[in-house]
Image 1: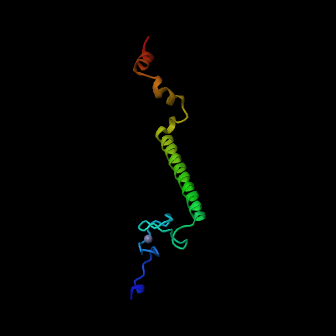
Image 2: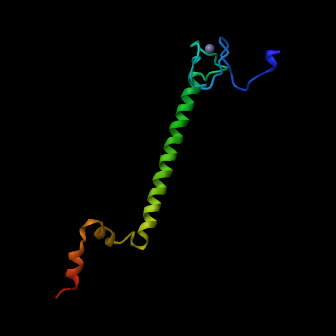
Image 3: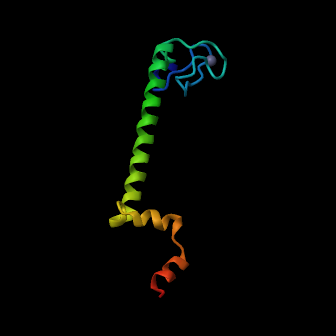
Length: 102
Ligand SMILES: [Zn+2]
C-alpha cells in the first residue's frame, strides 16, 4: 500500500526524508550521500552555478540600464546641456542674483 502514495519529491533512500534541496549532495536528515538520481551531480552543480551567475549578471545589467534610462528621462531636454553640470553644485542663489545686477 505504501508505494501507492508516491510523492513527486525525491526522498532519501536511507531514511525517507523528503529532499527539498537537490543541490545538497547529502541527506539533510541522516547525512548519507544521496544518489545522483536525487541530488545534482558535481557537473550539474557547476552548470547551475554558472547559470545563476549569468542570471545575476543579466539582472544587474538590466537594473543599471533602467536606472540610466530613468536618469536620462528625469533630466529631460537638459540631459545634454551644460546647465545640468551647473545645477549640480556650482550654481547658488547669489550667482542668480548677480546676473540681474548692474
Ligand atoms: Zn536520509
